[in-house]
Every structure is written in structure tokens, then in C-alpha cells.
Amino acid sequence: MASIQPSPIDYTQIKKGQDYEVDLVYQVSKFMNALFTKELVRRWGSEGFQSFSLHPGVVRTEIFQNMESPPWYKKLPPILQTILGKMLLVFSYIYGKTAKQGAQTSIYCCVENGLVNGEYYQDCRLAPWWWKNSELDNEDWSRKLWEFSEKLVN
Image 1: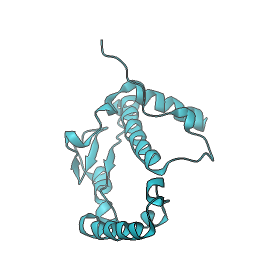
Image 2 (image 1 turned 90 degrees about the vertical axis):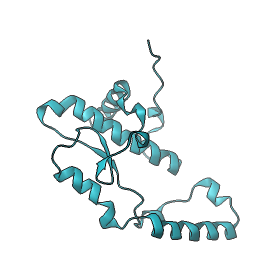
Image 3 (image 1 turned 135 degrees about the vertical axis):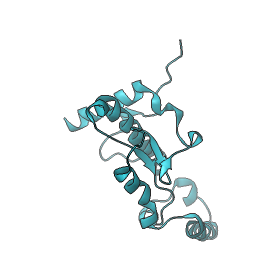
């Protein structure tokens, strides 16, 4: 019998007005979106509901200008912060997407027929196996997230 791993989501830390680490919360929230998608399909997929999670890619929007810098970045000398900032800006223009390009996978999942319900998409196709978190199929974790969400919106 396989051992049950503890969930990477610490529900005791989810409280209104509580400080949080931006990088960690972003990662966990994306994982939660995908888990919620899986649970929605498990509960109502047979009724015709469709739900998909996706990665739009690195999209050049104002979100990065308004996001708080992580603690490790703030500890860098100002000159290194400037250099790193410029390098990230160049990287975003070489590899990043415009908002219109970033929206394409979302649009694709809304209008394309024959998609795999509950799956994770990237660049207008099913994401490769190595891009997806294998723990997304953990029914205990998705059920627990669903029940936690129900309590929040009760």
C-alpha cells in the first residue's frame, strides 16, 4: 500500500490579512487551481461540466511592475538589483509573450472541441508529462481543497 504524502498546502496559514511569501504563495495558488480543476471534473464531469487548468507562459504585463520583490532580491546591492532587473526585462522581451499571445491557450480551452477534461494545457495543446505535477491526481488533496473552499464561502 502506498503511503499518503502530506499535502503541500498548509491550510492553517490561509488567513485574511496575513503576510505571506510572494513566490511560495504564487506557486501554491497555481497548484490549487489545478487541483480544483481536477476535483470539479471528478464531481461534475459526468454532468457535462468541463474544466481545464493551463500555463499561459511568461506574459509581459504590468503584474511584474506591481509585484513585491522577494526577500533575497532586496538583500542584493542596488547595482546588482539594477543589472538583474535589466536582464529580466531583456529576457521577457526575447522569451515572453504579449498579453494577446498569453491569452491564446485560455481561448483555445474555451472553444476547442475534444480536449481532455480536467487536464493541464500549455501553448494550445496538452502540456507534456514532464511539465505537469504528478501529484495533481491525488484525490485526497483535491477533495480537501474543495472542502476547505466550501467552508470559506459558506
